[in-house]
Length: 348
Image (cartoon, rainbow, N blue to C red; front, side, top):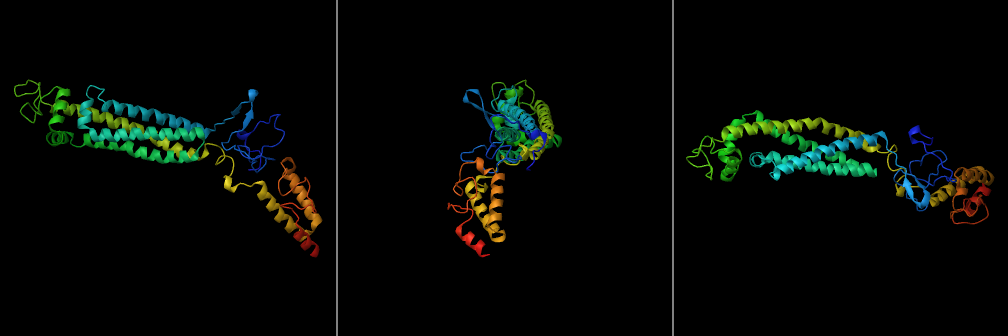
């Protein structure tokens, strides 16, 4: 983690970068990189902002192969979700010539298909938010919602296949006599230009075109042909999308946590970060232990070397140190060698 990393993480150095960046971003674990954020450091999105001409700043966005895989899969998912929602809405708004028959005779399948398409569009929007913002919380929700979309996707396919494959004629006979009612029969008669189920004298709804002496044929044959065709197209389209949906789910599970090459956003959460005050306390305790075990001179030498390695001279003066070297006499808020430590060291 402290090495330069593979070539895909290589960072190009600029002439303006005289001092190392004070924590955060994609380069937080590079060699000779500061491990602590500075005041006002808000580089949380794995991007380094470089000053451009005119005073503007632009992020250097770098997409890895996992993010591209998410992008392509979610694009495909978005396309067929929107297409399915458009088809369902055209059926609900009676745009097609025989859409009214679907609304009457296949209402459960149409409702489930509409819910699946709407949830798919919502899930795709959550996915775009997670991909473009590098937000793993959104991507986790996206992965969960893709499973719900899969369940709602296969439901209308199973319903339509079961209805078409197992005694479709008997189911239509029961639907016409018990479920449709007068208004439903009238709508089917008007669209298919028929009268009654077998003839105008068998379960017919009287209208301007359907009456006792009407020459229109019965509705059973055209209604059966229509249902057999529409149900076949329905479950074929649904089951054709199942491999694509499984691929979207697999890509989401495999790539959601790798939208950037490092887990998280390049830095620890703020509550767990090491700041200068915490480092001062740690150095104070470490110096006290060194002074007790090896004496004040050895401790001073080690602390001076540690201060040089941590590049504390290049940072603003912190409360625990008011000079660039370790002082044994100057009292400070977080003095590395307190008087108590010195007395204990001399006594030892």
